[in-house]
Length: 193
Length: 163
Image 1 (cartoon, rainbow over the protein chains, first blue to last red):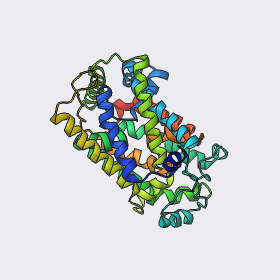
Image 2 (cartoon, helix red, strand yellow; image 1 turned 30 degrees about the vertical axis):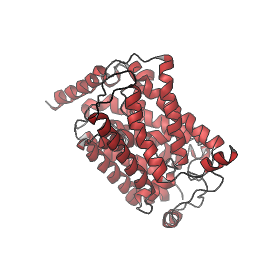
Image 3 (cartoon, rainbow over the protein chains, first blue to last red; image 1 turned 90 degrees about the horizontal axis):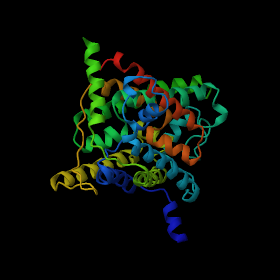
Image 4 (cartoon, one colour; image 1 turned 45 degrees about the horizontal axis):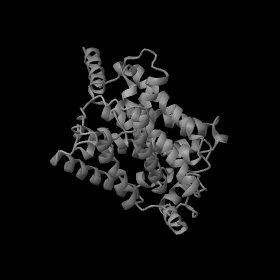
């Protein structure tokens, strides 16, 4: 049992993680005709908590309750993985990426997320404003405007041969490239790295 | 004129949601999705897909990892859907499997681009936001609330945005 847990605790390679994520598509379809997608959960949360008579949030969200269960599961799964299956070694990051990020001011490469950014101490600073508040807003606004995220469009949509999803995925990539290469150096400088 | 079209679009989207076959799934029968989510969350963490650094590697083209993950996920999804369609496989409750088509609108361009900006800065799409919080990066709760706010603002102004 211990050996099994140790084995599970190693980081899983892409050719294990990727296909397992792909299998979620047929599993959700077979379990209850559900199309894989995650960003809709944010819409359902709005519909449940603050519908404010906005037409976009007037629908029977109870029919979509499965989606809220699914994302709650993701949260619990994250907790279980961190508590019981956490990797004893530090994450291996491409050296070229470490070099590039180091030049931008990041020095701590020990966790899944850079501790220099993702801590409560940064909440009311410019770091918090850009990396949590603005970043989160762009994710929520953009995914709903696009009608889906990496799961709904890139994985579910393209798996189902939907060309609008290919368009969406291309623009996800363009947005990410623009942020990484054009804006991020400027933002890092501005927030005090 | 444009406004009317947008109203029609919003009505369309709501109609799609409403027209979905009523499953009548409540309470305990929803637990299966919780379980799938838990496994999914574990994969997210163990595959290190929720790592801000992995997303940076991807957008800098310095590692094949994320391309391998997304590419192989799409491949498995595609083959699975083809099998389901080819053999008319039904759900465990005997329903015909239906997948709604994605309709093109300019939101996929503008919204996609905006999401991409956020993806690179938070290092997370919506799924990993949940998993990151679960692993103990509790400050991501702020990013999550902000994402909910972003979705709400979209909903509030959906009829005024170019689509």
